[in-house]
Length: 134
Image (tube, rainbow, N blue to C red):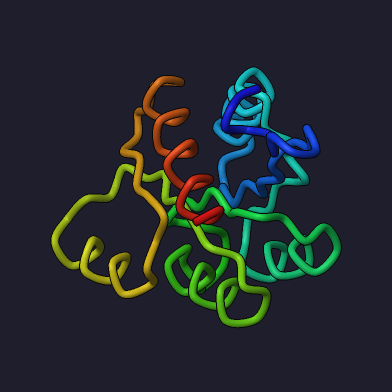
């Protein structure tokens, strides 16, 4: 049994991907599938993310910073947590001081810098799952 599933029920941990680049989202989805997570959908903008969260009720959002539309991933993560109780792990190339300061204010469960490896993503998600279960 991996961290990607509940040891008591065997149910796979549900993650939504919020990423505006369809090719990158597909790669993330494949990686998550290989790691044993259940991907409940992909959103490219804040409205899509909020609708997806309402429909599928994931346990975690894997969040990019730059999204389609006027709202970025940091503000989207803030809304997902406030409206649905969904926490985020950020997956982004943006690591400047201002961005990281804004990210910190959303109380993320983790951050993985792009380009990422499957090992980095697995480690961040395993830690996030443990934090959510604590």
